[in-house]
Length: 419
Image (cartoon, rainbow, N blue to C red; front, side):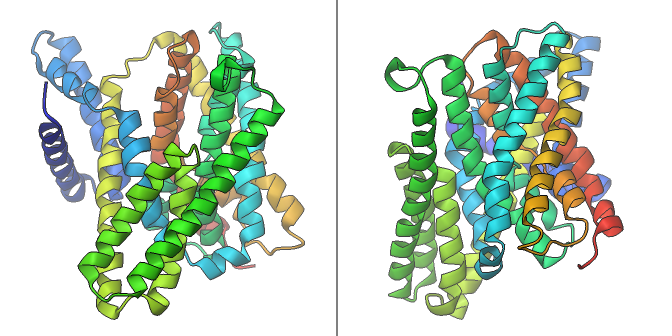
């Protein structure tokens, strides 16, 4: 059994080597490139093991990957720091001006997509002869409907879009992630047949989950962020201020978990406050340079590791071929759900808020899914439906990141123009 230090060391070495290979030879955007290289290496290793069995290489690397708890690494580790880093760079004034569009897409949009994808997946799975109840199909709809902020924000760095559309994309992805986790928690409790203490889960329990987790998380993030902001404002020492920001992220996320509030929403709100108020009257020029430089580096490194892990996970997620049709059909199903979740809010809000021409196709095609969906799928208890859901989730994640992520720039060039 490898120690935690051994695991981190090996993972960093693999990441650095694969990043160099992508930069020198493949030249894809580095996060997508790492996923492609990791996935390619995994498939090659599986092929070698099939052609030349008993080499031991596949078993050793698989054993290493199994020691990394992907769900815990994402949901209890990387996610807090990635969301905070992403939120710090969002312009709060622009986000406030787009609050209606972002808020509706991050809440109502997630519910619309969950219903469409869940209902469609129930029909699809049963049509292909796989065990699937409506409750578990809705669990899949909930975990796959929110766009992944890590994937979306990393893609936006390489794709130039108008400011209004960029704010809609980044704001929605940051907040619908937290809302999606709340909806997933509610759907999972319903599918499992019980809530806290074994009591049946009804509408009131679902409403309580939403208000306590989502609104409570936002309030916690606002209070914690303001305390950190005031403490930074009182001093001018960039090492302490950067350390304070780290403590803010880790402490707020951990406290939210213990209080059964949404940690993702809490750190997003805290990041928005620090990133927008700090430069005005809390950070000196030197502190500002180090603070934003530090969090940009954290964002880049953790993004790189996460996308590599997604590619390597195929080594341990050996799927049954009987799941293939359900997994493949889930891709267009999720696309339809995303289209409806974007088109409905734009249709009802376009008279109150202007939208850039091409908003619907770009937001639909730019709705990438990533590590959060996989982590949520892995957190499902062992049931006959879990393997089907996991296979469909992985298929959708790979398609959206590789195909949609690599073609989004050309789509933007074709359909986007300022209104």
